[in-house]
Image (cartoon, rainbow, N blue to C red; front, side, top):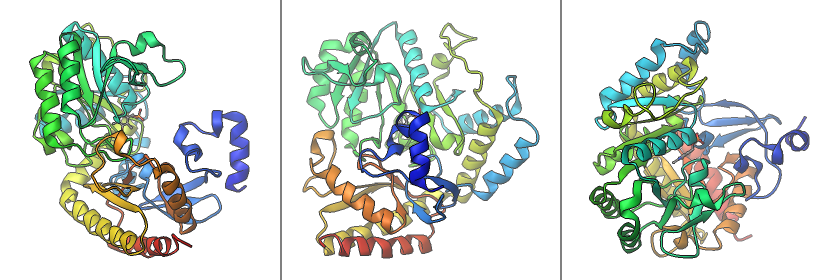
Length: 427
Ligand SMILES: *Cc1c(COP(=O)(O)O)cnc(C)c1O
C-alpha cells in the first residue's frame, strides 16, 4: 500500500486521518506521506524512499532517531519492566539526574505530555497564590489545555478570546494575552490585572509559531513586573529545555523561574512531560499538598530510561557547542544559496533550532512581523524539498531541528539538494 492509499483508509477511522493535526499536511496541501522507519537523520517512507529529516518528530530527538545507546537501554528495560504503577528506581534516577544539574529544579514530577505539564504547573501557581488569572503571550504555544487555547480578544488590552471550538468564553476569561516584544503592552496589562495574576507563562525561546527570538531585555521586563506584582514566573521549556543548553533558556538567560515545564527531549522520544521548580511550590502537589495531580502511566520505565539515556549521552558528548557550530555553518551556507538565487526566504537559528521564513528587513519577533506571503512561500519550498527527499515539518510556522545524527556529510548532501531548490525557484 502506498501513502495515498493508507491516507484514504486513515480518513475513515481518524478525524482528518491523523492523531495530531499538523501531520495532515493541511497548511502545505497535498496528501501526507506515511513513514515506516526512522534512523539517525533519516526517515523511510512506506514507498521505500529515504528522506533527510529536519522535523525530528517536532523536537524530542536531539540525538536523532533511534540512537544506538538509547535503543540498547530500551531493549534492556523492555526485558525487565514496562509499566509498574508502583514506586520504582527508573524515575528516581531521572529525577535525581535533573535535580543535581539544574539549580532551579529542586523537585520534579513526571507526567505524560507537555500539555499535562503545563496544565499541572498552572494549577500549582493558582494554588500557591490564591489567584486565578494567567498571562500568556500571542505567539507562544503551551499545548492544548483549555485555558491556553486562547488569543488576544478584540476588546481591552490583555483580554482573551477562545481560540478553539469547545473552549468556552468563561475559560478564556481567566487567561490574559499580551503581544511579544512589546514592553508597553505588558506593563499596561500588569497595571490593570497584576494583583489578580497567579502566573505569567511563556516560551523563553518561542518556537511554535516560527522562531520568534525575543530581546533578553523584554523577558527581563516581564519577569520584573511579575515579581513586583507577586505573580509566579513559569518557563515553558517543553521545546527549549535540554535543546538550547542543558539548563534550557533558564541557563541561557541566567534567570530563575519559579516553575518550569518540560517534555520532548526529557523522554528521548517516548511519551513524557514534567514540571518542576522550587521545593516549596512543588510540595503543594499531592500527596504532600492539596493540589491534585496523578497519572496511571506517569513515569513509566520505558520513557524514564529513554530520557535518562538521552540526557546522559548529551552530557557525556558535550554536544551543545559542536551542534551549535554545525548548525550555524550550515544555516550560513543555506542563506548564501537563497540570496544568490534571489529566493525571498532566509533561515534563522538559535542553537540547533532553525526556522526557514520569508525574508524581511527587520528581525521577526512577534506574529505581526511575519509577512502575509509566508504561508505560500513555504508551501512552494516544502513540495520542492519533498521532491528532493528532504523532510521539513509540514507547516511554515513550525521550526526545524538539527540532531546530533545530522553529520557534516548529511548536511552537505542536504545543501546540494537545497541548492537545486534555490536554483529552480523562479522557473
Ligand atoms: C510541544 C510543546 C507543548 C506541548 O507538548 P505535548 O507533549 O505536545 O503535549 C507545550 N509547550 C511547548 C513550548 C511545546 O513546544
